[in-house]
Length: 413
Image 1 (tube, rainbow, N blue to C red):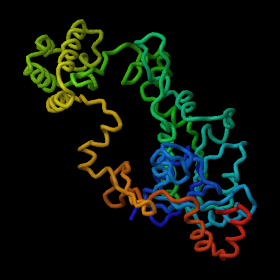
Image 2 (image 1 turned 60 degrees about the vertical axis):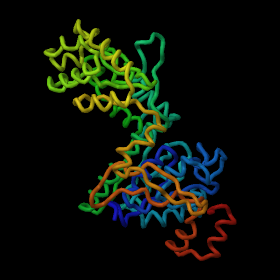
Image 3 (image 1 turned 180 degrees about the vertical axis):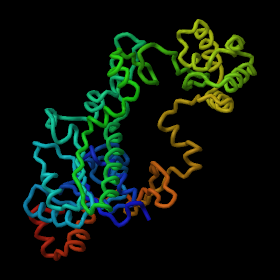
Image 4 (image 1 turned 60 degrees about the horizontal axis):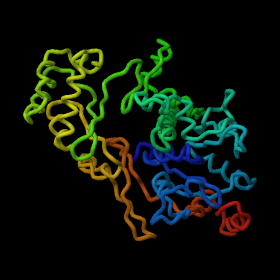
């Protein structure tokens, strides 16, 4: 039993909302992916199985549509929107991502009025109001305008531009906010009996996540320095990434703040016959060590640490530093993450059967663990229109002849 078991979600989203729909499906909702005949654009996103493009071969789609059912229905047709409204009357949540003024198939506010118990969730780039509400958007645009991109980069290398995190990053951040808002509205509905319209601007989600950059800029009006691998700040701080003997990188996350951890870390380094200068820093306040470019001895400390890391392999450094209580880590590549013993020990990865291909595929699992109502990956991603008959005939009571006429007219698939 999932937390949203028994509830129905009509997922009318494009890639901006695919992750939000996946989260709701994982919580147990019956998520119906309403996609146009011909397929959602996400089916055209690579990478593809065996590098062969096709609407049923997109690994992007396999990930983001997992746990959903597919209803291929043209919402820009009169018959399609009529059937959609019938489904909305029995649904609990509608997730939509159409921008105002860009040919949206239905008005979310009107839908909310039409179905007072329905939670209508509009996840759009700039929201339903404001001077930018119709502006074009991409994930990179969201990260640039919202602030995260301006906080990432290498100001220590002259002339380098800001950089962005990985693809679909803005959609993931916004997806968590959207799923949380939907659950909050459903919880409130238990008291009032009424749904509501939720207006989420992805632009505002980005601005909500720029951490310490916001107070420095808003309250201190201080220019920020982009620092590789850590948050931007008003002044340069010590570098945190150092190469190892086996060609990898260690992120040192500053120095331990407690004296006990600092002494343990120094002992670990000196056991290997290195870091003799570190003993002179034993009594230096931990917080000053962390922010210590203003401290004259910090350059010596960092030089000793860099030389130690360069002389040893990443796994040995990681294990020893963690045993000393230092928050050091290996900077891993995506393929190295697949072998993460901690994730495997916690059952993070899940295997999903793709029966029609006689194939088992491994996916990332739950983003959180709920002891009584677990999040699940659910069924494999649906084939295009796989559940059209099941939904239109089984739920709405259409006859096979009526469904055949809709398919012939291109309204359904």
